[in-house]
Length: 564
Ligand SMILES: O=C(C[C@@H]1CCCCN1)Cn1cnc2cc(Cl)c(F)cc2c1=O
Ligand SMILES: [Mg+2]
Ligand SMILES: [Mg+2]
Image 1: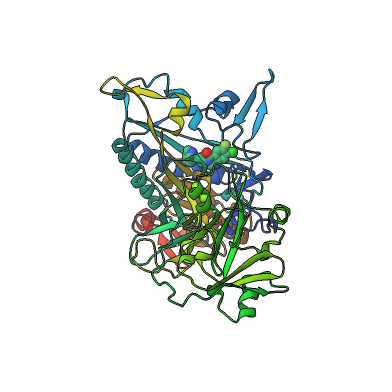
Image 2: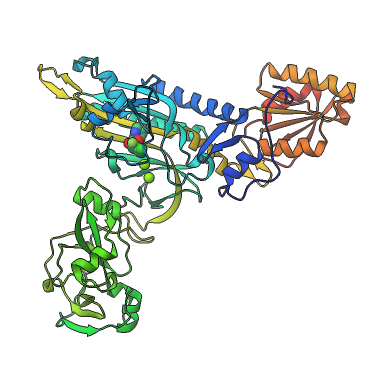
């Protein structure tokens, strides 16, 4: 491709609003143009890279028997009412009406559409298993779109859906997908971990998220060095306590605690460690106030609370007004003794003795409290795991790393089949709901994750597997015939076996090299002074070394050394 015909609006400066490195680099290297918040035009370089990523995804999906479809963006409201999700999702679900005033959702995902597609066709178990997939634009009206393509409101997803007559068949496809995802993320060059994850609102039980390791990642992974244990910390289970306090139980005692509204202040007043205090949280579980008592140095994990109570809505902290109304005390003075709401305690509290809790009266606490001093509805794992404590598999201490969620695989079960009447006759002729799996990859997010990993201060460094072009031929002077002649014929020759971008612009050398570093093509061939003697300069984007190569040895030199 001649650069005079391309559209690569590189920029020297970028707006400070671009916080993530990949977002800044995509703006500087002329890869995207924002149309509105979280909404972008993919410019030619980006489109070429997306094509390459999608091609790898298609190869791996087809290799495990996936058939590609392309479903509509506009979903009739009635479909989302059948699944009960029209009202379940708030303003994140983008909605519109057509000219006949019929309402539609702009598809954020396609469970409803794919089930409505197959339920009229799949009548017998003999037609199963079936795996369909698409690569398509999704719409999710994020409250705070940011980091360029990492969290947009329109984005490209590969979403696949599989249909099964039994668990064994679903498990087989889940494992095939898991392996296909590992192949995909390996081929595009990401450092990734598949982590146990929370299945969230979508339901189902078994799910893994594929996390590209990156400091910019919004997710935190708990993993161990000496096993392949890895979990999103939303999910990472905490082991039951092994050391129990053996202190003699002391008598409960009400104490004045003026101006104590935090665990640390309480610890300081009582001259004990934070670990010897407790914190009392009041949360709303599907509208009902519930109290959860944790050790003072631990944090409540709302995802685990939601899972424990099998709540259909997200669990939120109770507002201060509600707390005052029910407890006649402020949030810093609450406790389980004579609590007006049900009390649940984290497993770690079971191992404690003689601890302080709020007295449900401002300015007062109880000290020397033990479990026998209050009514416990239940105990559970309600906290975030802390770095360094033993992993759920007992293999060693967990470490934390940030990750970008680039894919997720779910065993969905029969959630949608039951709601939307997708059944097949099994081999005994009995109607049975079809088991489903669903599997997503953020294609545009994967592109950003690749840039987050492959760059230096001067720009992007594309891995060979996804690069928009293999070779960047740069003519140093478009006015000197001998240079133009060599460059033109070199471009024509190399095009036969490589993807070539030919910088034939009438620009200064400095501009050409700066742009070439920004755009990040792995191999650079400079046609300059030595051209007349048939000498070219070759430089690889991931090295500073410059090589003088004879024109007739160029192709073999590139073949031997091009392995970005
Ligand atoms: O999308 C999934 C599950 C899988 C992921 C892989 C591909 C198939 N779907 C979960 N999810 C996430 N955000 C959503 C946002 C909106 Cl506004 C919505 F209405 C629905 C969903 C929603 O269902
Ligand atoms: Mg997540
Ligand atoms: Mg997820």
